[in-house]
Length: 451
Image 1 (cartoon, rainbow, N blue to C red):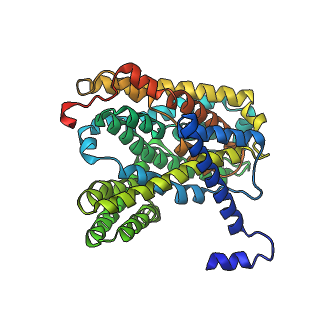
Image 2: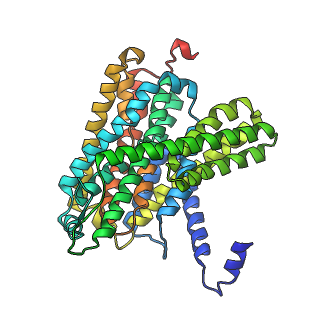
Image 3: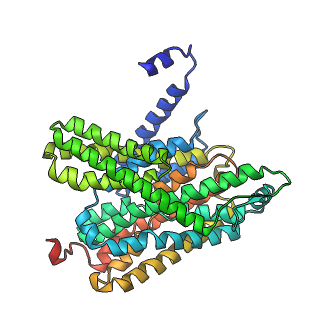
């Protein structure tokens, strides 16, 4: 009713809501056409999406008044993405493989952040470095240029296994391998977003305090502060997610209505995020914890088959829409004149930075994965380490974090670099994963304890 009144009162001029709805319908329509096309062309859906995003960027298609804000990305998009992933992760297999998942979720994120950050810092364009120097501020033990570089490092740290999972499903790989890849992705998403939020607050505070004035401004930002801040927001997020997850689980036990039970999970996904953020915790971790509880206890013990099918179908559809929107929105954003479209994407500095960051990602991931494989070697068939290394694709979460940055010089440089990294990652790794699985001979392998 409210939307109808606003639309009716626009006096012939499209309102902000009408423009938003039009843009959303257009994006979803394009995504559906892309999905249908991939059934004919036989390429991974995410690869097709990022290619369509590239076409949008190169053709300069940018709807008027199309704006992407931090709240739109973080509050509207992140909770359902993480909730859907958590629903499908089995705690029993996660318990068996918690050690490699934990190593890949925290130390690997930190190492990747540092590796990509170092490369980015070395290749920052002079104009951006000059802009940061003019702010007369730093982060305490870091300069602003290092802060921006590490922020970009943590943006590229999360993995996105959507294309990989499709290949795994087709090949019938073991549940152990799927759990390691899915579990790593889910928890390094939570870790990366929590660190990203801390770095972003520190950068924003330092930039606001400096403001280009002569007086030097310094943010209170140390390694100890980062560690304490991360533990604080993670703990609050875990507690909030656990409490709300248990509450939703109790409600679902009392219901025998698949519509109400699905609606309860919708309220839980966004409610856990918003509540945790209200108490200065990590909304991302809250959503992950709540999703794991519902996915492993609510679905398994207190849902009929019809309810389970409705729930999974609903969240899979939401995941499809949001992933599609993020890939297409990045193309729309890159087509804006302020960022530069084709001219920016083919800029030598942007191309060099993207290539160097991709190389740093491969090297850092190889060091992490093969080190973890050496530690856990007796539990893994030797071929697994190659698949896990190659499964470190970059995707929608990296794009979501960058889209949440305020408009300006920092975002304008990092956005095209990240897009090229994601594009290369999805094409090189996503499209070749089925061939790697076949070459290693692990298709259809199920260890005895998984039967």
